[in-house]
Image (cartoon, helix red, strand yellow):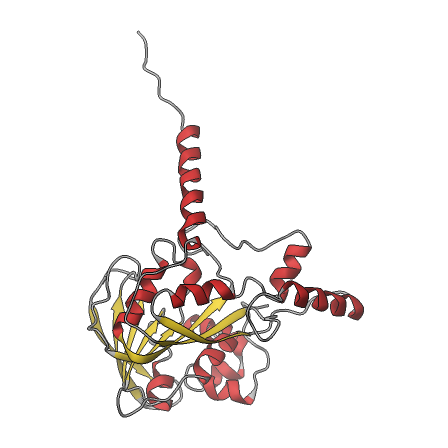
Length: 308
């Protein structure tokens, strides 16, 4: 299952996890607890996102991580040379405060300082100067952005230097497993879910590209990563299904049939931040929200005045 630690890891993935979790937890992943277990549950996703990141250059050694409290700092600072790392995480009780922290290496005595900012990205501008970073890594859930998604990428563009880079991970709503569920009559939601931590909208590859293009980015690559659980059935059914899925995905914009569960997107800053977002971005969410509010209002019990 996707939420279980991996039983076996490749040599390349082990080299990445060496910077994230202790060797003891890596040797017995199902016995790991707390943060180490959560990192191991995302092992394949983190490996795909981190292993392809560029190393720091002499012109800029500042990196911004979205959706992290610092677990990836040893990899970025120790392996790739990004000496000045800033993490942005959802607020708890220190909204918009800049906190200096240090993250120890899980398998050595080294320690790496970084800055932690707790802030909701959709509500206000980041307390960061323009053109401060050379790299942005978005490890948060863009699916949970519900108020102003394009403002988030507008802000990330603002704080990135010209020709800076963006790397993000997103759920793949057109994966093999998602399409399998759809054809079996049990579709995964691709638009609206309820709850503050649930997915508000899952973005297809073309939608991610349009969203980034409208905020000053140019998408360079979109690939699908992190294979999902194997599908049951006989070999000929699986083969027929894969051919059917490949036909359904002919217009996804990916060079591959995008079978896997996550989308790995890399983009470069090509202009100053803009807010030319696609029309579809808010139409269905706002209309659905208005319908929900209307139904709640209509179904609300009416209070009648008491008569003597």
